[in-house]
Every structure is written in C-alpha cells, then in structure tokens.
Length: 123
Image (cartoon, rainbow, N blue to C red; front, top):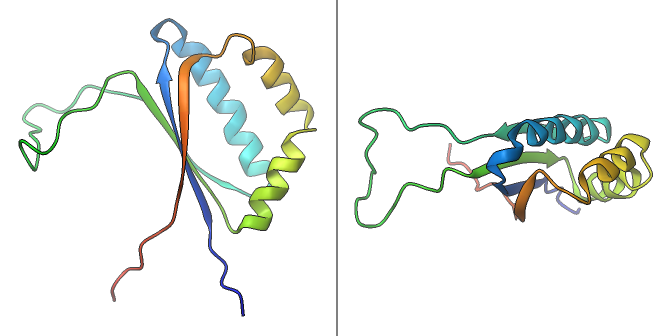
C-alpha cells in the first residue's frame, strides 16, 4: 500500500518595500486559490520587529534574518491534489487575473520555493 505524504510548500519572498500593500493583495488572492483547490493555507507571514530582549539561542551559530522577507506556507493532502491544483489554477479566471495584474510588475523582488516533509513525532 502506497503511503500518502502531504505536500507542504514554503515560499519565501524578498519584498519590495514600496509595494507592501500590493503584496498583501497578492497574498489574499493566492490564499483563496489554494484553498479552492483542496489545499490548506497556513498564512502569509510578514516581517515585524523582534521583541525586546529576544536574544539568539545559539550565539555565534545564528543571526537575525533580513527584514524584507515574507513567507507563505501551505499544504495539500497528497501529490495528486497538489498536481490537480497546479492544473486547475492555470485556467482559473482569478488566477489568470492575478497573473495579469502582478505578472509584469510583481510586488516582490524575488522568491524561492521549498517543498517540506514533516518529521515523525515521538509519542
């Protein structure tokens, strides 16, 4: 029997500081599209100031990240649902409109995508 492994994806955006409002509009559209086609969107996370006194757990091994990074995190229950989303979103009118609106002049400077798997949890 084949095991079903969820498809979780993190998308890390390097923001254009002049286009934060446009990025928020972009994010809202993609949350709706992912959920429309069977995914769970865990949200978009924007940079914020760190809390006072929030030091690093491993000084010398870590550093505070850049303040121009936003992250999206979403999960599909399996590869079939994820690939179905990819096929459906290509012809979805809301996706086509979003790509027309943001494609030529995106509200971010760049992005990278990473597929993740959960680690087994001990009981």
